[in-house]
Image (cartoon, rainbow, N blue to C red; front, side):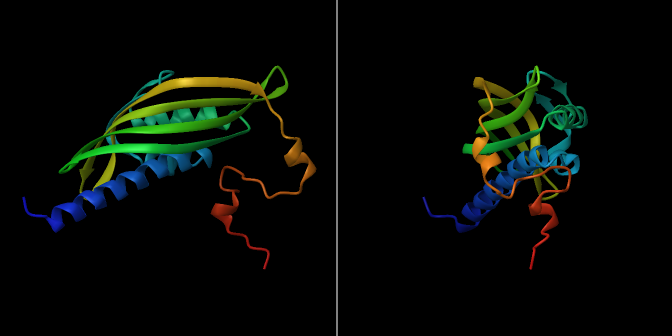
Length: 172
């Protein structure tokens, strides 16, 4: 079978664009940016995160509300396995998430690891999620241990448009 350069480029471009979609999803959560978060989904998408099942608008409102009520979060993408077939694709995306909560007045870190089982489609050149089910593989809640951050003047991340990655407010 002959090598089809055009097909390879289309496949690689699809994978790149799907990865960008996944990054918009995660960054939209952590920066509390509902527009960026929502941009990962087609309008008719279906989402099941266990705590909520519905369309993208309902899901983003739910997730942004939950995340907005806690002190911070960081969602990290692990390995991504994709199967691309023309204008549709399916995938399994590993994730690790940290959430800073207050439990009875005590700062607590909730760690969650799991996978997203996704379906994607490309419409008008735009790859987005059409179906997503979140599976949790493990979770752990522990008292926060932030003495290092308290003892050192380190630049910290922020949310709601105040993060340095969004302001780029360079001191010089």
